[in-house]
Length: 305
Image (cartoon, rainbow, N blue to C red; front, side, top):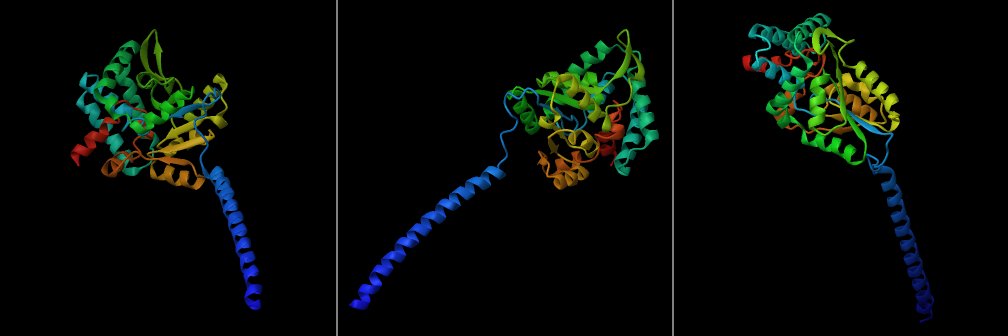
């Protein structure tokens, strides 16, 4: 019994120590999990009431399925702005770019001149009015709901949201207004007394030019680019995406996907299966970004295959 009496208090003491140790361990685990959650969870974004933040969205394959110029080109062709032989030339230029996967300066120059010749002599107001019709005919149903929701989140947070695209600014402005966005940055075609001259003001808003446009707008608007967000599908927009504190790769092409993963950028992909394969081609770059009828070649090329 003495032996048992000697063992009993020790057993009880050990149990008490075990309970204490268990409680301490549980409390430490709880605190640790809270700390880990605090470091891994994304903070609320966009930040409500931050008037020095804004969002910049690429258009083609980011906000809209396919190229805006493709849809606009379809509308102009329907309205007999250009003939089938011109469409065939655009088709060859776009098909070459799609298969080669690189931008050929001569093709880009030829495509730009062809596109500008189509609108030369037409009034700016006429193209704007037609743009409204074409949006309803071809574009409205091709807006990505997921990207639209991202833009709306910025608007709901009280931030400005801009489209940034190589498409003509008139088209981009129509789309931005229809989506309730703040405005658009796009390629500017020269006009005199409201009539297109067939020339550009500078160069197409493509690649590094987009980053410069965003930088200039941010300076004029008093924005802090480190608090801004940018969204694009194309590796050509890496300069713009790298400019902001919150870059997003949306429906990214392979080069942008690799770059985004390497830098731990956020990724969103709203495509599935065959649709992803179809819109994943570099259609937003090069030729497709500078010629109104060029993008129509995508559909024509597919029909001929």
